[in-house]
Image 1: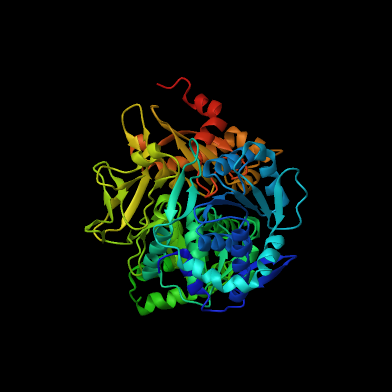
Image 2: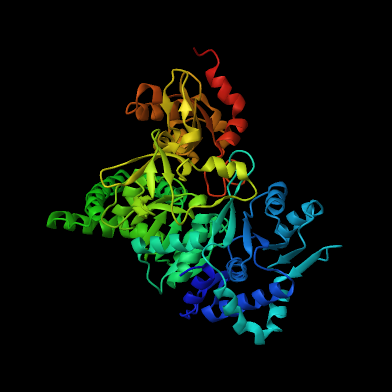
Length: 602
């Protein structure tokens, strides 16, 4: 298989009634493979009629929905380069991607997304038209604004030409540019990583050698399609495998979607698994002493069973009996929250806390961690069955490529890679491209890692995020943050202390548990903000952190905290669209309070 266009047509050899599905008016609207094919081919013909050709750029500014997938496949067939735009971006950030990519057309999901484009269109001389996926657009003076159905009608008028579309698809080759993936922009302007058809196809096929996903299953698509993890995994790979894709328009609707769709396959980032885990812990914490004891006993049996599942071994009869009881009483209910049918779950985008990984394996929900970047299309390593090790993200997808290691570590521990999935560089940014590769042509990931005796990779931190204390000690903040977030009173944590004489942290309290504690302790408060500001609450959370500190080296210990009730979210500007913390934004938001922690210290 040489291109995404070929992958599309290969997938059409099946004809599921629900190849794609999305809710409308409270019920799921299903699109069969034949319907998807017809709509994609009509869109190809309409775009071709309007003068779009191979090498042109088209932006997609939309939440996850069937039209996103169809527009993407149509562009892949024509050789048009897509530039996805996160629907959560503001007009200024949207303008940057539209201008930098040189997009001629932008597909917008709703009138609200179109309004963002309209606000900045006068500064985008190359943008010729916008296409509204949903509804009828309002007239826009001097600009071409089209409805999705208008393009569908244009394509349908050329129905006799539809057989020719497959010939267009055959013209695509592995070296042709497929998409520009703009980084989340945690610091500075985002860069557009150039990924070819071959980058994606090679990664899909290599990943399927490990995961072996069969047809006839269902998955939920809720991570942004603008992110390469969902694009490659939840979009191309699922469609190729004959897995029905059910789109979730809002993360708030995810719990209901699990129960309605009952997926067998799940692609998610650690934050999703951690939230499920935290909710379960909150429920247990609020239950009776007897129920808490039952849960603890079940979890112990589950951990022992998980150890067997990691390596594919069989448990002894006593453990099998104990686990059977634990499963009926506890773990079956956990699985039911996720629809009750999950066979395979993947986690990527950031390291998953080992405790969370262990819990889901104990509950009979196998999670396979992977590691990669936008620039690597994205997977570099993936956990194999019977080789699971919590805290590690699996072995490299390939051992070698062109006679050299696919993945290796530099002297300072930075992960380096080269292979068929690695970007050719950054769009219109030769300097950034030159800086991204070493003298041997290996891509510099910017991540620090170690390899165990089986070649499994452990990510320790981002090279640029390492904190250096005033005493010269290097500290990786992410492992500390994951430890902190496992505490029942802590929802999120960001460790600070670069060039300081001790570490501190911005801590988002788990307000449900903190409120429960305050009520039992008789501490009055009128609001969450007031409770988080009370010295007693800060002391309580700090006491919990002191327990964690006991297992850390002296220079790694958290000495002081900023406690807040405000969750770090995408909407607050403190998380990227892939739910990673924007450290610079956190430092700016809490700068004065952080400085106050260090006043008078020496």
